[in-house]
Length: 193
Image (cartoon, rainbow, N blue to C red; front, side):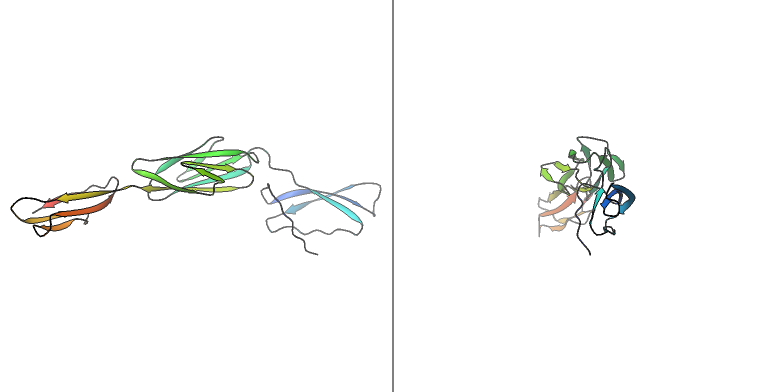
């Protein structure tokens, strides 16, 4: 017989303590060998006229993992209201007691904007709230700001204006304005000939 089992609040795989009462030994509850429980479930044999109890302990302190990934074209930092996040590049890892509430706060870097969160239980502006009732994977996306550069030509002469980034290229007086959208921090050289 196959039966669905729902396990909430635990990180699998783990070992379950097994206790059984059956007609084979009606005077005692027997402690059987531990049962391995994986993400795909488990297989066990239950004798007729028996009661079997599986005991899986809830998460203890510091063992529900939280993973934070910073992504996007921009830059920024993410801090947590509780615990310690250990960063390696753009990935941060922390661990918490089961059901702990954690608020993550994002601070965009210079010329960047926080454009969104994923994996949160709730979002309020630059803050992401998670309840550590299971493993959490959170992503903060930072976008590099873009700014418009506009160049105008005037006077009674003629000439051509170009930009080193390739976005501006016009001949005056046939045209007197050129513009380009550039990422924050981009160095541009304008040339008029």
